[in-house]
Length: 299
Image (cartoon, rainbow, N blue to C red; front, side, top):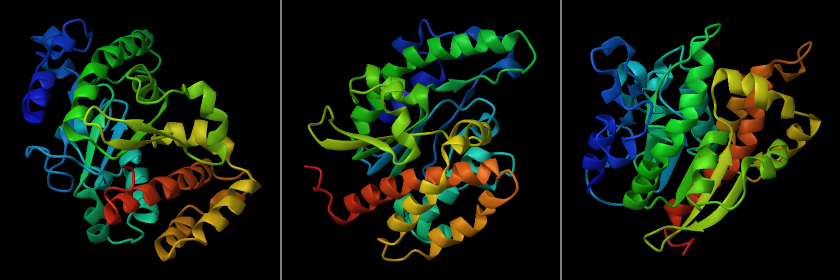
């Protein structure tokens, strides 16, 4: 099965893994406005996955519910970041420019994205309505959908053989644990995330080695609520040391200027959280650039 075939079967709920999925779109027949969202990786700014081959990096988010792909059907760190309400994409693109491409220009960022692939641990997404009983039901269904979609996630990984896998958030890490691509659960390494990203080496079906990085999802709620409390004076010290090792730190300094309200009265939650995520992405970016300069360094 090609990746095109795989994504088409998943989109239409025809893959064997979709049979028991509560978010299989075939269950929503006649309810067009209520169908769950689905997104595929952008081939204009990312890897052209329609052509068989491997990619350098793959980012796995949770699901496309309530985000730009809900309207566009496209997973893209460049285009979706232009949507002012899509904080996940905006945060992700800012981190990519500061820590991966080390250049503020969109053109330079895309250079490293041409071998990059975006996907979700849960292929379809459905947004919960706060204050409604539906929210609890949707959270339960989201967990069930993730288990079903893990088989499709593994097939994407096997077809693309990424050398760098970036898991954003606990649900995504749980899928990789169940697929035996990492050996530690989120609870085991969560305490480490205040100082550095968690990573493991793994061996893919192709026999190639890959680095798996586990970090937080970049949504506004997650950054403000779960990541910001990890910020401390030590965060600044660690950033100073790591940025000092970069050959060109101009874009990273620009990032710090952009998210600079950490010392305001009470501190700004978004800026604190983004600085913690920058610690993670400086390590992720180093790994991506290393693969570009030495494709065989992982073995």
